[in-house]
Length: 467
Image (cartoon, rainbow, N blue to C red; front, side, top):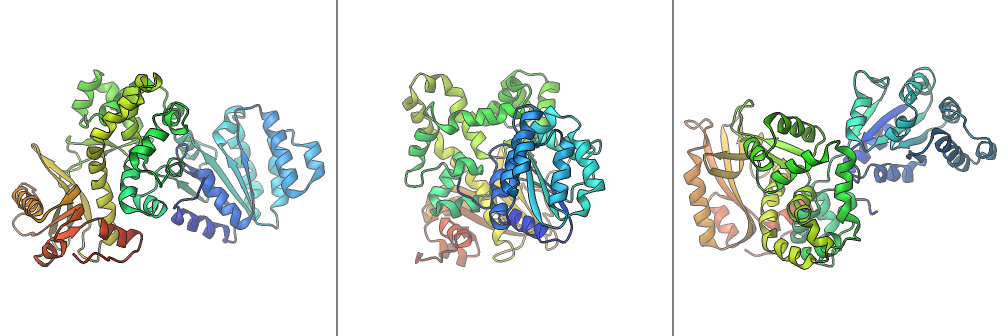
């Protein structure tokens, strides 16, 4: 897999590697998010070894680790003799790391704990009494977010032992754009494949988005077709309830009441499973930007676009796909894909605005606003200067007349946004795929951004468009 992004995480790991003390890092995040590739990258720079946990007996696992460590350290005796228990394993890496900086990574640590329940206690003992006084750089990795967070929790033997931790989240749009190197296609690919590195690297950048969907989602032998289901099944214990809720959100039922009505599930069940989905970073709850924290007006959405796409366009039509009728599904996708891309474009626009914050304007908070059927895509607030900037986002090419109409509608909604109305200073803006007469609107005091600006900010290419 090509390595994408993660520059912040790489910087943290390099800083830890160069420290003068023993390091114990915990890296976790859902499957396919890029944990192993991140550790491979740091090992490629400094040396070290990854030992992968498997669904196998402790005896077989330790024999395999003995062989791998024997090969790495050129220790023929270890290859033949092997470890009989985890104490022998930790004693060996203690001896090897007394005077040498060595990266030892235990990948899929929960698998190892599953077969040896006392492993966290054994590791705690060795860390407290031996390993912390060496030069080791120990890393444990895990894909089961819930189990890894239990291992980090107050009741775990490992609580307080780690020197650092990284929870890997989906990549940001800018990382995908730098990989794709075509800003418009990057928006389309990110809207479907999201920020999961394993999926983005599967994209064929020479083909358009429909061609990629046909190849990567609508073939029963494709890697991604079933992988999304597999990733979710590994984390969720009651898939039928979770899948029903996720399908409801993908279908546009984003309020708590709408989810209840769509699924037919009781309030207590919906509440319980939504909380778990939030804890697992699969969905988020968003409030209107000006609403108090305790409001009940929350809106639920996915945190990674691939789940929005999969539950919206693949999961409901699996029977058709399995019967070889993928062209029918592709027709539905082609019809509705622009709407999905438009929603994702709002989130991409937020990321862009955060990136340029402090240049064209300043804000301290940003989010969506809605009230009684009215909605504004982005509202940026500056608490200190009492300035408010309202944006509409359109995934389309806009003529000047259309821009004028959109800005007029935006001004009409502004008075309904209750925030320092008597003393605030208002600004208005529009973000689109392309804006005709963009500089004219800027001269009139509006903010106007399109993909040309995104490209300059993210990919670093200077504008060549004479608009």
